[in-house]
Length: 381
Image (cartoon, rainbow, N blue to C red; front, side):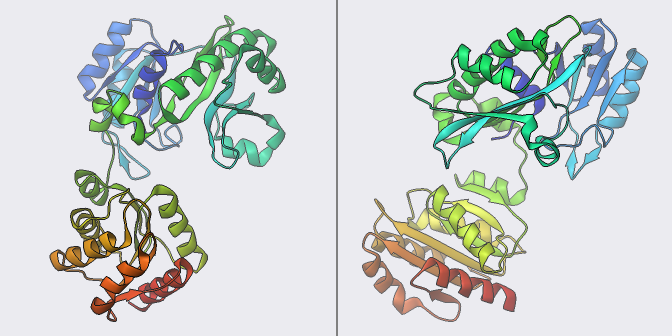
């Protein structure tokens, strides 16, 4: 779940991270009212979209007075930024900037540890910094059991070669940012830029936050959920309780488990195909779940073949097979389907599917065989 900048700043503020005073608005008049309430010009008018490049697109403007706030708000509201329409603005007090830094925490799955990245080169995309000067990014790996200590944070700041005037403020913000990342159940927290003011204060000027949907039961995230940007496919999948991300390819993918779904995307790419989506049906593969998944994918006009990749664990193979057969009886499918079924009671499941196989419903013994078959079918249509 990706948050808008204003939501990220509200999220950070809840953990004591200093952010600029401001408010979110949806109309020009409200933008002017917020600026007047802040009462300290200049202010910044910032488009709220979940995509980078706002500044280059004209979505971030400095306003010296109420008239300029009105002008910029009128121009930015409704603007299209990389396919995202601006419906909200964040109006905040402008900040004096001496230096700009970068800071983030995310999960390094291969290392099974949290990864922290810190750089004295902030204000630009971290990918650009990594390409231009990899040594400019100081990285640390944090054991979740040990957490981030003040001593480690201080050593990290020194390794990143931040201005000594920023050391104390940066250390305290990094400790709070790590706490926000862990206690807030985030997949990513990023401040870019993290600024040093001429006064010596360190301050989060931007906020990028991705929350872990699986932790929603522990939090009150209804407000964040209500503002999620989804295309029609993603909205339909969300209504059915499916974990779905729309992509641009032609192979529709259904898998049980996020790891298997990601692996399925990878193997389809490896054999020359292009996934149309990520769809994780979770631990259940009954008829209702399978029918919902097939309906969402079937309604995507770019899909020309469907790959159902199921590894039975707690859910047994015969239950999966019965769910697929019943779902196919409910949904009129427009594209050929390739099934790979393995795991618990897979043989029983395959036996149930066998009488229903045809050119339009095929089954393969391995994930690689199934991927090659579905990609060939997708390319033939």
